[in-house]
Image (tube, rainbow, N blue to C red; front, side, top):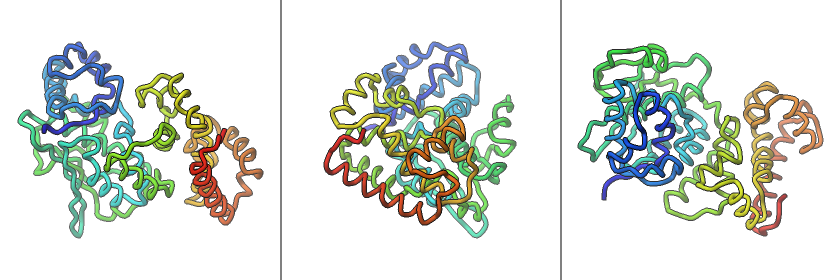
Length: 352
């Protein structure tokens, strides 16, 4: 059986193709991909067809860096549940190991592995089982992971090198903008080279929910079905703190309109707002128990538009100002919320 990839691999493809002077629907049909995949990120598409599409798009648009441009236009969340698992690890090494272990949930044809010596860590990328060129697919995958690391590590962090086995494109402007002059071509590997000490760096994206994230991805790996509420909660966890955490966007990721999503959640005795509240109530104590963060940063991480909105919400939920929340209260609060969530889930009562 041919390896498959989630159609999320083509997120923003239509807009990018049009910007390059191409007809995206015609390009999709040419390689045998149903255009419906542009509206459903979880459809399964032959990996080889996606590779052909990206190579032809690069050739006909004249953009040798088409894969890099496409990856630059999308968030790390295109990896779906896997994005949540990778973001929730305690440090870079654990994060990259999880990515390597479960990348097949996103695309079955990509292999990623981490090599280490006394000085460096090398995250290597390779597509297997395909006869067409994989340049654009590799460029896209490497760029997605590079941008995640830039987001998850302190401002100003850069790897030693971002390596590509192919020759440099004639026009390097996009490459320089995306990779800050760290891109290196005609290398022995396709991948990202980091200092070994970087592998032990903590991730700013972690909210200490790694075990829950791992359990969830494991259920996907075993093909266990999930309720709509579980899926929505997972998507809220992955998107909270970004511009994509809205009922409209999450309904679209589940291939539903908002009305249908509400109907499904109503049957499960919950709602989008109730699930959002649940996620925020679980994350807030964890963030407060972690490294010191400004009020503005806490508001952003929890999806509030302003620190004042976060402060009002926190007082209404927990009965005290944010500044009065202590480490002991955070531990007690997190345990209470977890017990409450498990109890509510088991009884199936209305949490609205």
